[in-house]
Length: 511
Image (tube, rainbow, N blue to C red):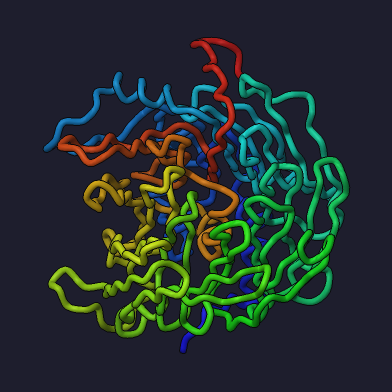
């Protein structure tokens, strides 16, 4: 039975990539005025071809003389939005983007018309921007030669930074992961341990020094939806509870696990979703009971929907002779049984080894019903806030060069693909630091807009590098609008707080 094992060495290498190596393109003079300095790679981690990378001598956001607001051509065979209509829809998007660009962190309107730099320079590395759940605060890691802190910037009712930035001393290795708790009063953090190849887990209240809680190798975490406690996958052999129920800061081991998943997720206030002995299971943190939900025959990757009613999963058995038949067991919910098997387009089960796991299935927890999203190779996926759409990232080759592509699937009314981006190359920051651990990151960052109508992503498309905005509508006869380049950068996450007003044409640049 194959196991999903995240080797400590890989975790540490990727951790370092997030906060140091992946930012090397910006350390030599790059910034938000020079997106061409952003280091990009092909989807398999190889350096992008020079012909596809932005020209470093061109200081325009697109690297080719293009400006934010320029869009790619849409499908010529179907009617698309006019430029005026597209700009109008982008201007109505709510919330605010947090953008990483080399060593810098900034915030921007979704249409890119207002951008405010917050931290980062040639001497200071700012990384891991993470919005609070209500979008009123942004946390990030800030490191220089003589200081290491977790910074938190608050925003007013107009979406503008206040004077109330606070810093928490985090001396030691750089923090490479942050996650806010349910009421945005504290954060959990992960960073390399001080000894050997361990991962340090701790908590931080904004303005107070960080507190180390535990170490493991590896360490995956998930805050409870209503309490100041976390479920943790520690060492790939224990699912533990840390926090109030276990005792303040204490660790209570719930069940032994066997390395078949990464980050746990909370179905409700007392139940955690995990994978055990080839089954998706619901584990009650109060009485430690384990209910079997779905047989997937081995290791799996999964992401729980925001409404906690469904999960999208990928069986890693798919790499060896196709996905096994998955059958629902009624011990946790009303008796119902469903079976599904991923098939190729000609109706035959997928066979043979794959370079990456294939397929993606959505499961309704209450009924066990299953919907096949795709049978293609899938690198990562994210739920929309309304829990009705899934964005999934595929990989392919164009002119012998590996590329990635985002696709958008809607579960209703007819389980269809409602759009996709052009092929793109991903920044090294994403391939090295995000993709290997996307199931963890989906619990703390999102690229979806608050009304599920748009998706922000980073990458190089036709030689133009930066942050792109893709409108994602419902199934329609017209072609989806082409993505819009809105800012320079190599990482983006969307916050759901107030939206700042755009800067008037010819007005002063925000600072």
